[in-house]
Image (tube, rainbow, N blue to C red):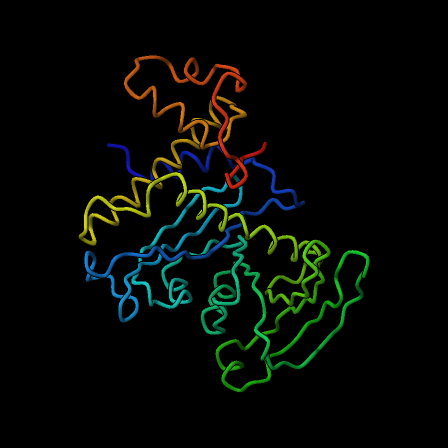
Length: 292
């Protein structure tokens, strides 16, 4: 039987040259988690709060093709930052995370591994400015600084310089402050890298809507994990089919077609060869769409 890890490797190879919309050749990952609610009466092992059960699905998403490369399932109350201890960091790759992953001891692990992180700074960050770089305010960048942490505990855990970028997002009107250990990329590119992090949010929304991980057929921890891995495998399989057949259909559309032709001994290229206009329309406003 083909394992999910083999499918992931296959999909990543197919999408390896997928454009990011940025002038960047390195691999870019987005890391985040989503909470899956469970009934505490049926899933007593998944206690989250006093009267509520839940688990967390932690995902590291390769942004070239939105392919999940690392999946971990934890208790609902586990802090997101602890998942950094389980990652095998790739030198030269970028890891984009929200500020829930800001832990300077763990972030320094990226420096030691020669990998790069991009995250949002917490509002109470204490730092000393070492250098201010020139910026083009028309790009949304308000400041680009080289800093040194001020708090003695933070310095102990992260004894190196950081780059702090203040960016005003024209689309949302939000003022964002980023931290990174990359000092070479343009400040706007760092901001756009963080903006692409939302692909992992779309991934979570897509699998919850289309792959049945809100309602489970078994109540044991193993049954829940197995169903989630099956859902991930189906998602990756659909991504592989889409790429190999150069299909312009959405992943949800592909799954719809395959579900009603599951027992037909017909080549996939023939099943998916009908004109999209001949297939029933579906609500695509929240679908995860692959473009290439």
